[in-house]
Amino acid sequence: MNRRQFLASAALSGLASACGSGAAGARAPRDPAAFRTELRVPPLLEPEVDKDGTRRYVLTMQRGRSEILAGKPVETWGFNGPHLGPTIRAARGDRVQMTVTNRLDEASTVHWHGIRLPAKMDGGPHQMIEPGATWSPHWTIDQPAATSWYHPHPHGKTATQVYRGLAGMFIIDDRTTAELPATYGIDDVPLILQDKSLAEDGSPTGDPLKGTFGILGDHILVNGTYAPFVNVRTERVRFRVLNGSNARMYHLTFADGRAFHVVGNDAGLLPAPVQVDQVSLTPGERVEVVVTFAAGEQVLLRTVSGSDDIDEGDFDLLKIVAAPRLAASPHLPARLTTPTPIVVPLNAKVRRFRLNGHDAINGKEMDLSRIDEVIPAGATEIWEIENTVYAHNFHIHEVAFQVLAVDGEKPPAYASGHKDTVYVPPKSTVRLAVQFGRFTDPATPYMYHCHILRHEDSGMMGQFVVVEPGTESQVPRTITAHHM
Ligand code: C2O
Ligand code: CU
Ligand code: CU
Image 1 (cartoon, rainbow, N blue to C red):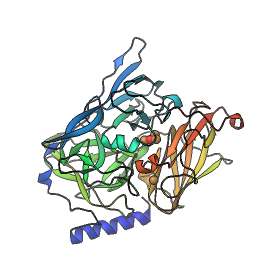
Image 2: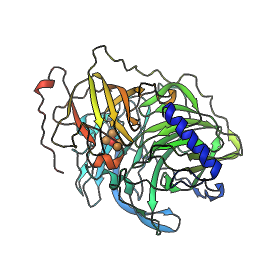
Image 3: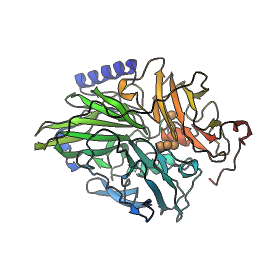
Image 4: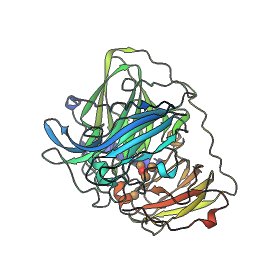
């Protein structure tokens, strides 16, 4: 959030508390006593380890029933269960193989959002998995510690499939980084934020492809749990927060305004913790925070209204209940990691992308058979994203980038780390330093797109290939789109 928006959102939330209601559709924070369901924590997915050390993770996409509202079972979709998916955890250097079976009755894909890997393994719209089929991508984890995630990516269907519940977290560890809370489910807790519109019977309703943004629901789930509480037993807890919503943007803060520390952005840890009292997150973005608790206290995590349409409404999200006695936690390290700097060469190529309306980039709708950009392997480029009207964000597959400027101003310190998804406020321009990877494949593209899924599905997406430097001009600009 830049300063202008921060002020706007601060003004709005001040207004909300003064008169008891926020912008249209907002609801006052609920009574803490209403947070009665224990937060579900997705199980860790245990891999099978092959003789050669390859860790094999098995995922099945399936339909099921779950109770989003207690006592009201409804149809939801998930991986290895009825809703959402297990958390995958792997370390830098691991050889991994995913075995993904589609037990839905429609085709899908599984994209590893934030993971650096060859285009064929990326799980974008060209790696379709037919109903009943199995897809087995494999690669070696080679990137810094980060909080990533996985979700379907079939063109035109991503919004619907994610909204039904297909999403999971993908944690990457790196043994060389500083000590942070890391005991999964105890002091290292995933928080997947997703909003739903719920019908009387408790089932998610609404058309994720309608209106300007698709769904902006008024029931916000955390890990699929509505109005949850979580018990904490340690002085400090690291929360890995993922905005897995179709369109909603969050401005996260605690009800008592306490300070906390941001330790990581999408693509890795920050060099040092940054103290904040509020962080903003658009769909697809992640943030890692460390929060300190006092024994016996309770506090609500909430989101406050902003001014950009996708962030309307004040909502309490999660009640955190600290045990009467808390186990001591290590101090927050002053240095977290030394990220490889993204150095922009003087003659860096500048590419410009114009987000106009909600179904095209640079005036062109997504075409699976068109290669929009050809990138030399290992390049660092400037990408300039200009947004003319509505709120959008921008995600690039298989890169790490740094936000150089939002309308000429530096991003806040807490969002200055390596990222793969960035907010592009209405009528603004965002300048990125993008570091591309080294996996070449002139025939298989990676995607870049708005991560508001209604926009992505209706064509606000483009394709790039990464090729051997010097071969750019020989690369065919049309490919045979694998079936859609
Ligand atoms: Cu999270 Cu192209 O996606
Ligand atoms: Cu992605
Ligand atoms: Cu958009």
